[in-house]
Amino acid sequence: MFSLRDRVALVTGASQGIGRVTALVLAEAGAAIVVAARTAPKLSELVADIEAAGGHALAVPMDVANPEQVRDGFKQALAHFGRLDILVNNAAITRDGLALRMKRDDWDAVLQINLTGAHVCIQQALAIMVKQRHGRIINVTSVVAQTGNPGQANYVAAKAGLIGLTRAIAAEIASRNITVNAVAPGFIDTPMTAPLSDAVKEALNARIPLGRMGQSRDVAAAIVFLASDEAAYITGQTLNVNGGMYMG
Image 1 (cartoon, rainbow, N blue to C red):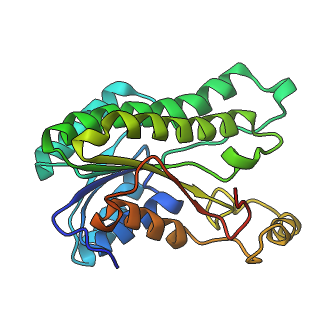
Image 2 (cartoon, helix red, strand yellow):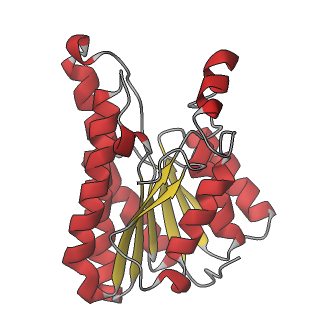
Image 3 (cartoon, rainbow, N blue to C red):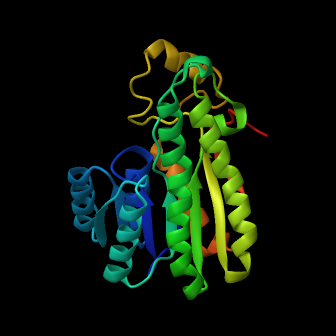
């Protein structure tokens, strides 16, 4: 495992799924963790799990769609740990529907959390990282940002926007020793995919060369790599973690 000792990481959407496992795996690698999400009780459980394993963690209830909460959350993180080295933008929602009938509220909500929320978090992180002249930002996008997906115009647009945002910020901030990359999971076994029927899951697996859905830890391992010193010369890239489903 790559070492993140003496690093501090903030993970949004950390209450479940990929975000929760990412926080645990970052802690295993030695980082102190700030876990952020809207569900405070789940964050408390996660902090307890990290600390029980010998790690250090802080729970910061935060809705990334609320800029004031984001600012307050980053202030708490900095006050508690004194620095911030890694930001993982993982918070996301889905509100699926055919484009012809998609409600404007559903479009706005998904873009606000999945894309604008990431941008607001990046702004707060950069204010800290630029002074340190060091930082790692990892945005969690999706395979559907590259392939498209019927019934998810809002989600696909937001996740594709994250890839563009990754490249723009990477070019803008590289001179400050800050890298910005994205991880694009394929179909991962998480609470978001749990409601899918067995028939749908079988059909999905048939489209994946490795023949199975991924696990949250597969994605977390990629994030840990991009957060490490070993990835210091990688920026503006999207690392696909999809079992071969998309090879572009």
